[in-house]
Length: 110
Length: 112
Image (tube, each protein chain N blue to C red):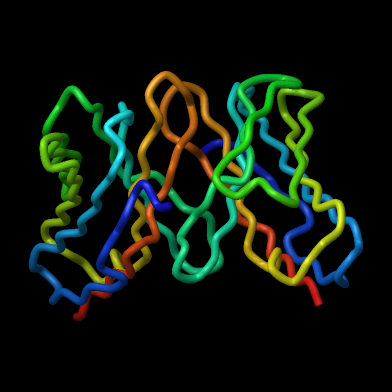
């Protein structure tokens, strides 16, 4: 399995505060992704990256920004968290085929 | 608008029988399809994939079928085992990109 770690694994925050989730991969994969998982919606793509400093929007990008300054790191930022952003967030990376996922970060926005 | 759909939220199958999970897609601009399995509190793990130029791919107990004219993908698990109980997601890659769209998932329960 690809070495993908997410931090923090659990976070509780209040509405209006900024939150950053970090994803770190050790496989030198070119592509990295952020998804959120919600009941009834499955996994929805937030943003993805196809190289250092190269990112693109996914299906549900509003309220989220990302940055990738190094191949191994992909950050997801919620500038001002809202209750609708309470979710489980998964990071993934890929080389030429399948995605490899991290274990998820559970975010609760009160 | 969900481009990749899994219309059955759940499925129960007896141990030893065949499990068939289905997925429909609405966009012809997908070139690669995948199935993932997810246990609670874990990340999804890759199961099997198929290119859009093929109609079948097999790996042990898992077989994926692709019907391009019907825009339909299915995963067959034979024989089903209790350890197969999990949520299964299908995914599709947008042609010419590395953007992957996932379905809503089907919860499979294999009864012993």
